[in-house]
Amino acid sequence: MKNHKILLAALALSLGAAALAQGGIQKGITIAFLPKQVNNPYFATAWKGGQAAIKEFAGIGKQVGPSDAGASSQVSYINTLLAQRQKAIVVSASDQNALVPYLKRAMQQGVKVVTYDSDVAPDGRNVFVSQADNDTIGRDEVKILAKQIGYKGEIAILSATPNATNQNAWIKVMQDELKKPAYKDMKLVKIAYGNDDDQKSFTEMQGLMQAYPNLKGVISPTTVGISAAARYLSTSPYKGKVMLTGLGTPNQMREFVKNGTVQGFALWNPEDLGYLASYAAAALVSGQITGKEGQKFKAGKLGERTIGKNGVVILGPLTVFDKSNIDKFSF
Image 1: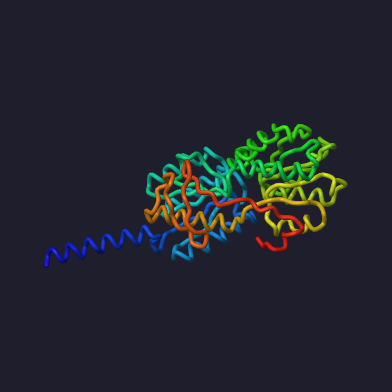
Image 2 (image 1 turned 120 degrees about the horizontal axis):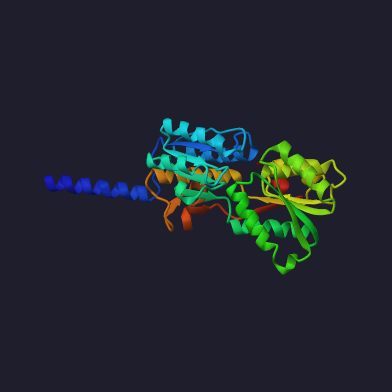
């Protein structure tokens, strides 16, 4: 009888481990999203996907965050979430290094930390869910603009904050891409920063045109920046003459594509980004993964995902939006 009980216990333990390995996620996991800005349509869409995933695995989720894109503004929210004993924090960092001490403290207290959209230094999180490979994003942005301006002329970049991890990584790749012979007649004259603020981005775009009247094109790899820049161009003498591309959402950019201000721009699906980040957080809390390279986890409708080098999980390739396809998307 004793041996029988031992056998049953071992079998139960084995079955439990098997269930976990097959994708079992603990119920009731608390997950808090902390975006750069809660009032940014891009992050609202990402949170929509995050919520959908949390609902699928019976978790408890919420989103909190500042209305301005400053790292110091995010710190107080991290401290509050720690006091609330959240199981996981999913954060898009406004600064690569400023949040690290606070996120390290969170991990020391057993909280799983996932970054999405914009990373921190690797020792400040367990996993980074990247929208796409930095190399792909940076090079594709240059290729799109180069084609629009005939591979010739002065160009500028309208970025978010000077310390934004993702923006700086993409800009570095853009600068490298521009060194290739194909772009010998293109010149990067300015990198401006709109701080992911609509009005400042609008003013920066206006300033670029005043300072560089021969400007042929602008890359704005930020959803706030590209829409503000498009709004300025749409009512200016430069409409249709100065090309604008970058990263934006179809809903933000539809009118500018249709009225000829913008020929084409790119993005991934931010809803899927939030969805994948939620599943990564749940897999960490459930003990399915730790963030080591090569580990795999199931992410609902997005299928099985593999963790790459430095704990990075990549969502997927960019989609280019133009007049031919923009009405097929709504986010």
